[in-house]
Length: 205
Image (cartoon, rainbow, N blue to C red; front, top):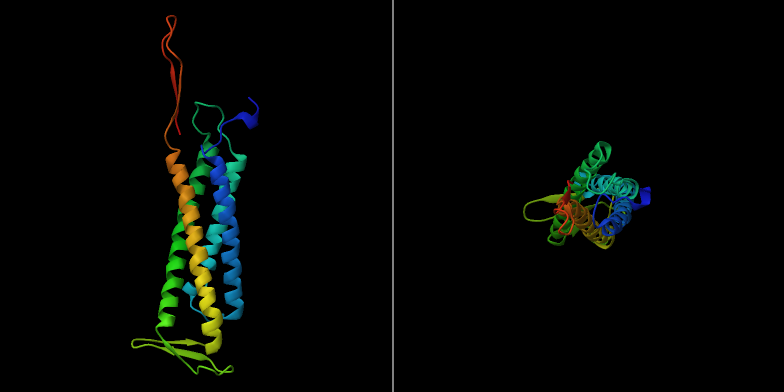
């Protein structure tokens, strides 16, 4: 059987390919955002620099695209080859890790944004001084930024990080769900006639 006629690893492979392509783009956006934050405000805390979520999202999307585009089942009704099954497990684990990292980064950015809007930042209109934001229970110092930059630029970047990481997490989770929903076996049955008995061939996933 020519390779192009062999069944795909996932039933909804076109949907999976679209999800992975979108995740790749969003992962690139998160990595770009993280690089901007590192260069612009290197003293921000680790959890506010989302490279630790953008890189897993990017890598898991690349691994998934390689799996969907390059790997096929050997023949309908046969289990996956060992190397294909191994690569599939790696892809699922990478996507689960990426989804967890992206959701955590999204929550961290959202919490930072909520805290920021509940604080008083001083000096408010000085451009050549570090910004210090205070609330009833904590003080946050932005060594590299002045207060106008904190309010006008950092807040927008935090909103972008929250949204982009949430989207990447949803895409990675959806891809994992496609693998989970494809675990059921295909059934190929022959119609009963007077001359033969029904034959059922199962495809173990």
